[in-house]
Image (cartoon, rainbow, N blue to C red; front, side, top):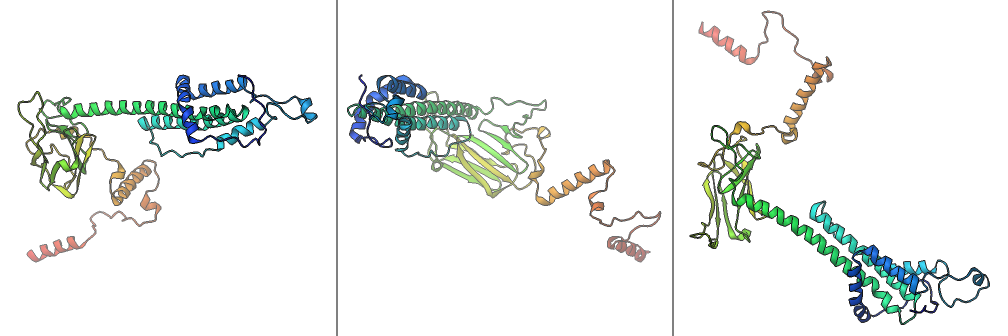
Length: 379
């Protein structure tokens, strides 16, 4: 390719292409971007082309500059950079949607970021090429960057989508396996009770976990089940979960499975107004708020029990109400102060403590006074 004539227009302006012209140039540019495979390689090839085949990197001889001789090719020093920046800025930056913190979301964010970079740098390189070459060559270089950006963005999106699908599929398979056979990993004590997992246990119909305040029941549901396909009844002393339509019969089954997923009486009462249910990742999750804050051996009467002596009954201080938290912190502080021989919280605050009484002397409160009066009356 012969070198084009020098660009005589302003450094910050350049000929524009119509949408139709841009579309015509996109196919070969897409192929070029795909072959390059990486945005940096694509840009390197493009600028190497400008350097070897155009006058984009040519600057005038210093003597010609001093004598103010008109340019026939190339750019004054600094004009090519201005042209590059102007080409970059002719397209606005586009803000991406907020991405997640990790895993597949992070991969998607990475892919999106690469696509934006391709757009910006590709657009700038295409336009600077346009001004560095003849009018016939301008359209081609103007759209090189657009092709690169589109191809790179698609490749990055495909990669991030593949990562997300792979992780999602792996997680889904693991969860489905657990729900299909809830008893697979159950271990038993010598007494024949289940060793708690998540402070709960398993039956052939569901898995369950618990805290001192609530119990969570996880039930597998047929694929594609939606909320309207379920009839969930949560009462203070019983549960009922049914499918509104009977699930289809599978090839290896003699008869269609029962539409009843769970039904029975609860081992303890719950607060129905604080209990909820939801569909999460192909499973139905029931969250039951306990009336009596105690550890359950099972969820439904008649199901296998766990050994509650093995339950992790420790509680974080933040799980208590404010008054209880204050009392606990006061006790811990006073115990530490006593070990160190320092004043307790009451002594620090200047509260009057009951002085020790001499032998044979006791404080008389109303209860003690009433008891003494009753004894005198009886005698």
